[in-house]
Length: 439
Image 1 (cartoon, rainbow, N blue to C red):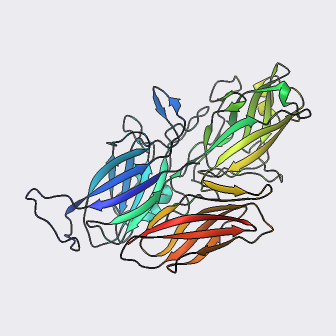
Image 2: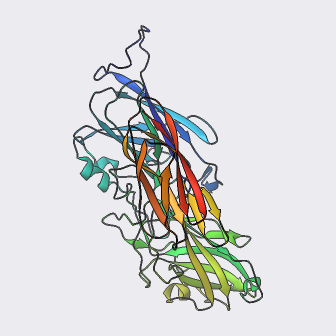
Image 3: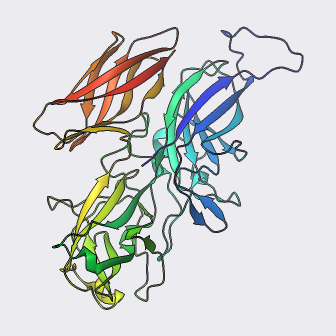
């Protein structure tokens, strides 16, 4: 899933008398300007009401500021966002300080009328970060509805002080939702796909609310591999047995996407499943599919992941009614491969059997342990290794399970911007991530 990158710079606002100020000095309490520049990857628009949004859109920002003792200081609402296309910009004013500040950035937490879509009001002055952030959740969805665009997103950054010239480098935003779509495999003489046409799909037993920040909210955002649950959630169907509700319709045997909040899953009728509507030999029907991978293991719904339901074989008609399909355990006449597509991977190489992919280059600020990105390696027989071409990038490590690994490294201190390259190897395949470090 594509992600937002937000560059945040602190710039000292000019005074009315035009006097200059030593950039090293911090005048406690004096306002400085917090300027945002957003780089937004292109994506296809989907219509919501009379406005077009996509999964990368930003309608508004809420900046939650915490002090050096990790106590909540203020919420700053940003409504004026300039720019068009892939680049947008906005700014706020905040008091300069020699003390540390932590910023939690929530995108799209309010609707077009500025009503909260997140329970911001539950956070009061001096509330500890450890209490405030885990409690943030989206508003409860009604039955037969689903999360809509633009989706709520979260990111985190921190500074040891707030002054002119400070830079937070690259801030990655995580969506609170996962997405899912369905498509048909290429027809062959044996898979029955030439007799099948896909109409739409919908979701059963999805969570009715989402946790705004992941469980690992005290570090820079990275695409998670485990579920972050919020207390008090329940499960809803996106449709009624009559068919009223939310469907993702198909064009040329591929549907648009549906969005869903995180949940742990199970291979029972209490687990999240999908209903696929389609015609087999011109007979309309409904098919029920549970979410399991090629090994038969249940797939949990994790934020910022995209799930593809690839229909690989159809051997007969589906249930005659939606009600029958909803009540069924599964459909025997349809076969599907469920794939968790991690769109953090932007640069991939294959050798006909195995894949090695990496996420985009990144800019970091400061020294110490930093998250570098994500690596995909499908060659489980080969050892995944990483090395740097510069001495100031050390202790490169991998975390996570399965084919995806989160990469961290330790960065030495610097007084000026510099660039290094980390090279990843698995068998005969290599990929690189270019890292820029700011002071």
